[in-house]
Image (cartoon, rainbow, N blue to C red):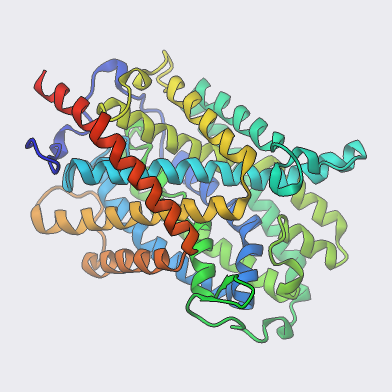
Length: 470
C-alpha cells in the first residue's frame, strides 16, 4: 500500500500468489522441530566453542547464556509473527508488511548475507572434521584441499557437501525434511556421548580464572578482540537456525499451530543441549588446550585418552553436520525465492518444479555459497553472518511490537508473553551484540549494505514500481 519508499503489503496478501510461484505445503511440527534442531545444533557447538573459549576463557559458558537468552526473545517474536503471516520470506516478509519496502529490502539483503555465510561457515566446519578423517583413511595430509587459510587453494570438501545438500533440496522438501530428522538423531546421540564421557573428568580448576578477559569487548596488545561479549557476538551464531523454520511457513500444513511449536520447541531443546556440552567441555579440559581448534570436542576427547570416542564424534559430525547445511540452504533459497517473487530479484528465479520445490533458486544459492566456503576461513564467515542475523532478529522484534500497537485485536494464534519486555530485550540485546562484533566485520557489513542500497535504487525499486503500475 502506498507508492513511497515505505509502502507496505497488506498482511492478508503476503501468502496470495500464482500457482507457479506457490510452494507445496508438506510439513508438520515434527519436521519443523527437526529442521530447527538440525539447523541450530551444529558448527556453533562443534566448532565455534573453541573460538569462543579463545575470546572468553571458561566464561564462554556465560557467553552461551547471554547469546541464548537474546535468541530466545527473538524466537518468541518470530513465533508470533510467523503464525500471523504464514508465508515464505521470514523477517523480509514481516518487514514488508509492517515497516515498508525499503526496510524490507535492507532486512532481506541482510538475510541474504546471513544465510549465504552460515551455509559457507558450516561447510567449512564440516570440512574441518571430514578432511582429517579422509586423510587418515587415505594415509596422506589433506591441507591442500582446505582452502587458502589452511595452506591449500580451494576447500574442495566444503564445496562438495554443499552440492550434495542442494541436490537433495531440489528433489523435494518433504523428502529432505524426513532425511534431516534421521540425521538430527545421530547428532544428538554424538553430543550425548561427549557429555557422558567428558563429565566424569570435570575439574573445578579448569574454571579458574572464570573471566580472564573481562566482560565487555576489549582489544588485547596483540590486536585480538576478547571478552565475554566478544565471544557472545560470535557464539550467537550457534543459536540461530530457528528462523529457518519461519521460512517454511508456506510449506507447513497447519502453520497456526505448528510454527510456534517448531520455533519455541527447537530453541528450548537446543539451549539445554548447549549448556550441558559447554560445561562438560570447559570442565574436562583447560580452555587453552582447545581454544580456536577446528574440532574442539574431538580434541578434548583425545586429550582425555578417549581416541575411540573422539573418532566416533568426528564421524558423527561428518554424517550429521549436513543437517545444518540443509536447514540454512533451505532458508536461504526461500528468502531468495520470496524476494524474486516480489520482483526485488529476477522473477525467473521464482519458478517451482512439479514437486513444488524452488530448484532454480536452490542451484543459484548453492553456487554463491560454494564460492565463499571454498575460499574463506570459518571465524571471518561466522562474524559477518552474525551481523546480518542481528539486523533481521531486531527487525522481527520491532515488527511484533509495532503490530501490537497498530493492530492489537488482530488474530494471533501465538501471543508472546510480556511482549514489550521480550521485544525490548531482543532489540537492545541484538544492538549490543552488534557493537561487540569485530570492527572489521562492522565495516564489511556497512559496505555490503551500501552495495544493497545501490542495487535497490537501480534495479529493485524501479522494477517493483513498474509491476505495481502494470
